[in-house]
Image 1: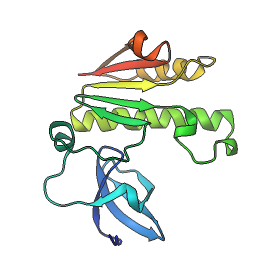
Image 2 (image 1 turned 90 degrees about the vertical axis):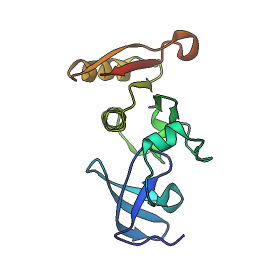
Image 3 (image 1 turned 120 degrees about the vertical axis):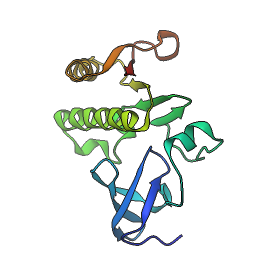
Image 4 (image 1 turned 90 degrees about the horizontal axis):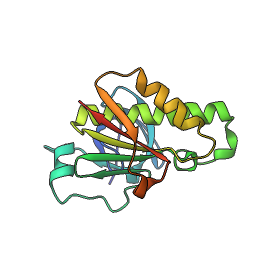
Length: 167
C-alpha cells in the first residue's frame, strides 16, 4: 500500500485516525482526529474507507493481528499498559521526569480517546514500582471531571493498575 500526504487513514493499533501530513520512507506524520500530530510506521496505518469506527472494532469481528500489548480494546473497555519500555524505542535516553511526563501524557491521551469513542471503562496498567506513577495518575484523575477511579481487579492486575469509569 502506498500512502501519500493528504490521505485519510485509520490507526490499526489505536482507536481513531487522521490525515497524513508527511511521508518519510516507512513512516508517516499523521494529524490525528484528536488534533495531535504523531509519527506512525506505515504498517500501523490503513487507508480510511467508508464507515470505520470504534463501534466497528468493538462490535464486529475486526481484530488487528498486530495490536500491541500496550493497548487492548476488549468489549467496552480499553486496557493501556503504561510501562515505559512499551512507549518508546530507546528508554535509556530519558530522564525520570521525562519518562513520567510521557507516561502521564499517554494516560491522558487514552482517556480522551475513550471518551470520544464512547468507551466507558479504562484500565491503566502502571505497575507497582515505587508508586510514583500511580500517585501521579491518581492526582491527575482527581482533577478530571465525569469519572470515578479505583484500584483495578487485584486478582488480575495485583496492585499495579487503576480502573477508570467514565460518565
